[in-house]
Length: 420
Ligand SMILES: C[S@@+](CC[C@H](N)C(=O)[O-])C[C@H]1O[C@@H](n2cnc3c(N)ncnc32)[C@H](O)[C@@H]1O
Image (cartoon, rainbow, N blue to C red):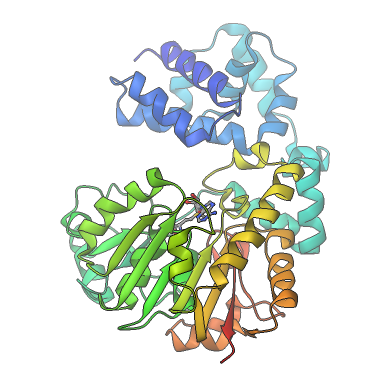
């Protein structure tokens, strides 16, 4: 494709994504479906350029002011993630000159806002939580996330998977903490590898694996994954249960649960019962009250722990949306808690970085439910064979994962035991 044609497409894609009226990954996928003839390298350039604009939106919009032509075209030029010589082929003489001038700007001398590229409300909240660690977090959020796999122990051991990857020429190593994790170097295409199609591995961030580990599901138990979505954690729980017992995968979204089906088929699990519920007080939930050994509430949240993958979220979330989420998180946690039997375990988790969605929700639940005793995360993780568990636990005893400290997405999880 001619460079200018690709730059025009990048401009058009950015115009759509920057409306911010839908998740960026959905808009990008729909755009690619419409432009079927695009090759893998062109898709890569378009997607990565778009994501780079979302990551550095404030900086790039500021630098773009000096240029002329459509704003989205200027943003695409400044964020270009393809070959530089290819890009030059698309630029007219004035654009070449402007581009060279902008490259010469000393970005370290720019105001803070243009260096952290966060909306004010979020920058303030993260500064408050992290103090000096704010800038390392900002830096980590600008990197793309590593590609982690979870080994399906029903079908293979981690050593076997590492050997199979080595044979396929894919550099990989065991993850530092999860007992089932493998971290790949780079982003190799996995979809067609027998390793993947035969269900020996699933793609799953190490942090997400650790949330399942904290739940501690065992053989023969009754377990509920209350907000199962497409089942990332469901599959990990099912494997921990060695395909025995009964694992209910609830969600209000039938569409998301549909995403679980092909993964379930690959995994070889037959102990999983997906069920769409109308809301957290659904009849089905009531019928199981007091009967369940472990309940995981992977609550709907702002997703701000996944900014490396979903940089649009920082522009699509707002303090008002967080207020509404807070009400929902507390309601779901309180309903799900009714399922837990005496002596059973309840886990509340999010992929948010913010206290208000994490510790604050957990503290409010604890205060209103004296029949639930908090369990410190360290010993639970150690019991689940998690290595160096102490590095993952906050002073208050919660599992707290940060991209700049653990190279995982940002996650929070905390556990209680229902008193007998
Ligand atoms: C963080 S996502 C779950 C991700 C999933 N556990 C995984 O590991 O892939 C939160 C899920 O909660 C679901 N949800 C929202 N409101 C709910 C409710 N009232 N009851 C149950 N699930 C709900 C959403 O549809 C969404 O799939």
